[in-house]
Image (tube, rainbow, N blue to C red; front, side, top):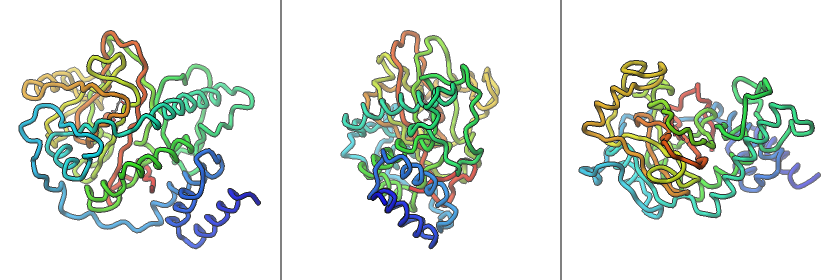
Length: 345
Ligand SMILES: O=C(O)CCC(=O)C(=O)O
Ligand SMILES: [Fe+2]
């Protein structure tokens, strides 16, 4: 038996005894991201674990207090990665609608992550186009535990090298991203923020490559609209640029409203193209006091915000480069929306 098979067997014993947490810890700490079978099993266990673990009842100190250290600022507060702590995170998200963290992801993570996203999109395309021998790529594999079951490919034009993919559909990528979250101390930071453990989810944990779409406008939205009862859920989104983008850069960034207003706006009116988008008329009203921001990000810079934030992909008029990014929504375990399929990490 190989070392990897032995690890998987030990993990199975722990799972059979109901101890998902130890099984996951074992595979995560002793396994490798490029061990295909192990990375796939780890994704399955992370999805299955949520139901078998105990989660606290939602506490009533929500939203938590913050010290207003960024009050009076226009736009988003900015800090360096080594200053990321719960005080800055609370005052940023709850006081100003977001917090920019410069240099959160270091260069040794960024380029490999971009390459991985290319591999994932290519593997999905190969599978859709039934390229012979390429159907079962390590880089694109839908776990049987994902609700909705196996991906159904229609083939042809459906997929390209541009697009978004659930991170769990790429087990090596999910493995590496969780390693990154640990490296920058997110589990403890988010525990302090939520006052309980955070979880990931199948549907709101996304890697993407967005192409320039000069002159186009994407939909203004609040993720709270999709996620269920906005007043019941507790979230932190970590959006990481893997390409220089926004501002005067050559790739699309984010257009986003600062200010920390905690309300869900009407959708589907005032010129909104879809029932889930907020109309330009409403944005124009808000922008009188809170101008739309399009922050300039360097690859590795991050923006934290939550489900009340109003934003859209920032298509410009003369972009020439694709933009890679990772969008990770964390949920307080107690109120994680079931429809998003919570993922233990
Ligand atoms: O990456 C983008 O352009 C969109 C990101 C977004 O909507 C989000 O992170 O919630
Ligand atoms: Fe969004």
